Length: 112
Length: 115
Image (cartoon, rainbow over all chains, first blue to last red; front, side, top):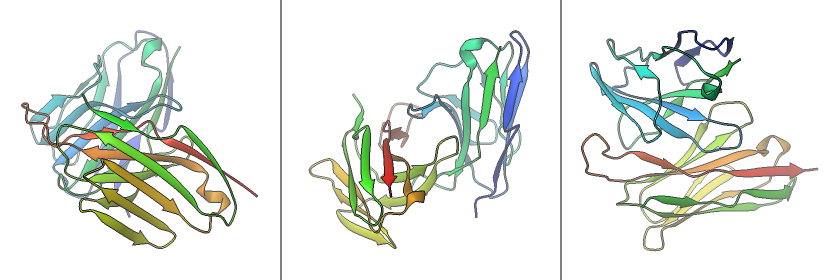
């Protein structure tokens, strides 16, 4: 069973607020990812990390930032939320490039 | 460029067999994944193919032909709970800095299983 957790599961906030989406995994995986997915659309990679103090931007330009201070924790921060940030955010981790990715339950963000 | 093609929607009947195709054009190839995603939920892993041929796992099988850039997911004895989106993802080898072996995702095939 996958041990990767995201909080909150659902979030409705006002424009201009700063938010942090939490993602934690207890599998000791070095590789962690953040994806953005709109309903009925494909997964878009927005950030990834291959280990502590390593973070990179993904394919889809995002105004969010990430940090990786500990192996198990990969939070995503939006400094000033806007309605265009409304989406589902999925966190994933995997042991190696040849192994399956485990996904968290996702955070469904609505910015009003 | 990188491209993954899957049918957008498919419909099948409970108890039947359905095949979901995936074709890809990527800069290199290092494996193909199939994931199942129910509406509003996270994707869950179904299968991984890196060599040509058929991999069977219970009611689900996945086939790969690297020379044709083609894979399919075969679902047998369909159940109502199999109604979901099925995502094909290819691990490409892109040697520009920071992008090695990234996963390229298809849009997914929405499968509706009817009684």
